[in-house]
Length: 261
Ligand code: F6R
Image (cartoon, rainbow, N blue to C red):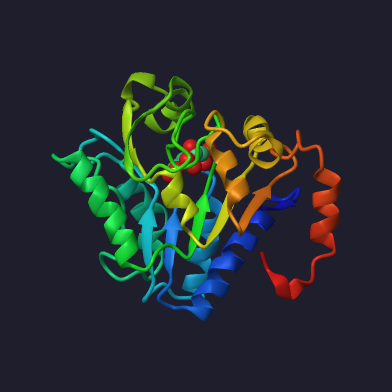
């Protein structure tokens, strides 16, 4: 696991955008895993700006989102399909229908989850997966207790996650759905490169477990310690509880530029 700590969150967004740009230069038809939530927003701003300047193109790329609320009306602004459309897809040049997500309004939930897994497999798997992390250590919506080998399925959101996400629902806890469909930890682990972003003090405990804790379903993101190519991009506040922070800084400072992340 590579840990990069930078005092400027904008620099972290640049690093993630550079990784996506490098990937698209190598493989214009790459499959990219997209997260919603606030953590990747500055990356999406950066990608939109580069696309507007003609520096990169998603025209042949495909995207899969991580998760979706169950039970939100199709026209709800916080439905993750709507969010990713608003925050990224409509601002770059993805082909129509190239970005998809789990179907939270499917009548047959298990069939929709199996179809989503199949769609990712049929596309050749995810090349680069953007992730955030929840304050309770979830990635996608794999809440504490999730199977470390799980696949796309329905999950119950923890009270903490619903409290954290109430800010997207006008601060109203009752407006936050109780259930979601989410890629499993096994699904996420199949991506070839994972790029996780975390900023702010509220993430420091989850980041401490993610990077230096014991691998455990209690802190689901810890499964990423088993990933052969996981990059964790942190600001100082999110990195505040890392015991080996100075080693991570020293390592990144001495890294040859050609290596990327
Ligand atoms: C969103 C997702 C979640 C978020 C996490 C952090 O698609 O999968 O795991 O990444 O809840 O959310 P933010 O970035 O809003 O702090």
